[in-house]
Length: 148
Image (cartoon, rainbow, N blue to C red; front, side, top):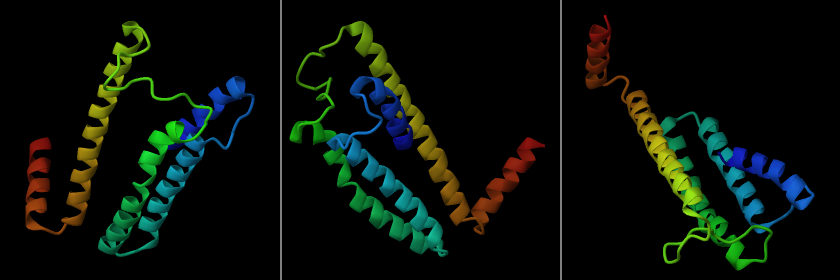
């Protein structure tokens, strides 16, 4: 999603700013986030022991969390090309309800989708880690019998 945001932002930025890329605070911090994601993926693949890889990736991800508030508040801390937040908890939205209600519905839908995919991924990871456990074998056997 970060790569898609950067790519579509560049496509949108070309006619708007006249350049594919500018070293804007938000863009640069998003690029750093993308590199952190690549680093977590590469670190996870570089270490053969799954438990050690998970611990190392967890540490790198926790360190990378520092970048999230930098991305969020970059438009307020520095003079950037990006506009400040359109929605705040304390103020009425600046756009008409015909625009922000569907936006909020889509945001909630995306959060639900993300939660569902996250839960499925976590379940798969637990099953992979516990593949030799008797309870997993019993679950797989039950699923096979149910399917046939």
